[in-house]
Length: 140
Length: 161
Image (cartoon, rainbow over all chains, first blue to last red; front, top):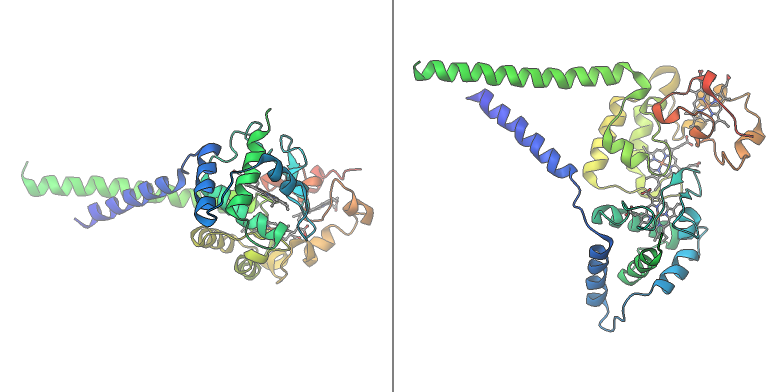
């Protein structure tokens, strides 16, 4: 029965690879809920997210060369451009790009990287929620 | 049919399917390697192609890729950190397809600082690198329209003005 076992192994590996590839689909609103839960847990006086605060955060530098807008532009309905490499970046506003904020792991990965580059630290749940509130407030 | 013969036939079929499958994998791999610059891996393309062109593995030797993969949280002034599973898969792909000899024989961290790169580009005027549409020598696609496909043929080059 050796061959049967190895065949089962191949099939199992294939099935695992497939489930690993299928990213868990989410919506911007669902992702915002997880930021809200985190923010509440971290600060008992949590007073909600603000699109205006998110916009200011997004458009400003925070002690380093880059702001979020350096790569994602002051109008995130438009495509951006990587400030260093010049590579085009698809629009950040979900209204202009439905792929945005549809994969929680991807969102976390990029907040971690980009906050490090822009602020030299991780963003708080409040900051992430404010930014998302801003991006969700942008209509087509 | 008695039971042992049935089992044998089953074994033969399973083996045949497994062999076909393995052969398909090998053939795919061999084809990717014979195409040289066009070798591809979906994780590599997605992760290493998000901030810039996914630079073809042939353009640096394995030792350079190893160093690059070991330093992703501080990657040429950007945080490019990756989860361990993706990093392992990409590292193995890069090393398997790494350059050797003339192109890959040098332990530079930047493609754009290798001797072959400097030689191939010694006729490009300094002002061309500073053009706002180019920004950096690492922006291969600005001049090589086919760079995303691994095509750097000198006949297809167009320097923006």
